[in-house]
Image 1 (cartoon, rainbow, N blue to C red):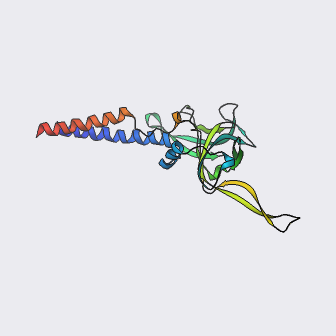
Image 2 (image 1 turned 90 degrees about the vertical axis):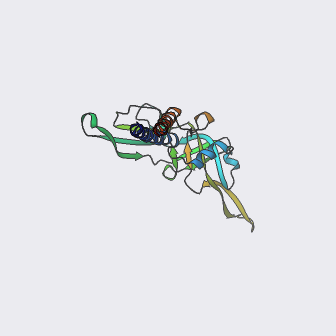
Image 3 (image 1 turned 45 degrees about the vertical axis):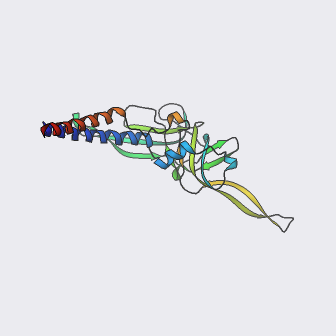
Length: 222
């Protein structure tokens, strides 16, 4: 009995690993564990009070040239469009990602204290997943105009040296802040929608029970 139980536990373990990989892909997207910790622990910093260093900004997403969603009439600030093809026939047919289109129009985040411009090509974007038909050949991932988002990244406050026309002294004029590395932009602004790092209980329990049965079989055989 030991060999069948061992094989069964191995298969269950492989299935569990696969389900865990899918779970973390769905939960994390472009985020790292450091991003998850920063999202949960960093206080919100108003744009007008940003200094040099790592910050979390929460505000409204905007765009000067919004697009119409492919799914409805919503105005979209930034999006990815995934194009799929079907390979194979019958039960072996599979939907394969063939092409990805990404919007390049500049976007911005705004709160009551100011606004920061963002380049979607220089950002890691965690799009909100709203479901959809997995049989469709075109899928749109998006963040809408007016949506509340969080931006996490390292900023630097820039200053420009300018000469006053009537004085010899040099004055420093604030030019705002900029991100020094690609920031994370995410729709997850509330704790209840932060990424869930605990694995699904059902899959873990199934794997653990299979391994336990295999060990029990080995013990009884001895």
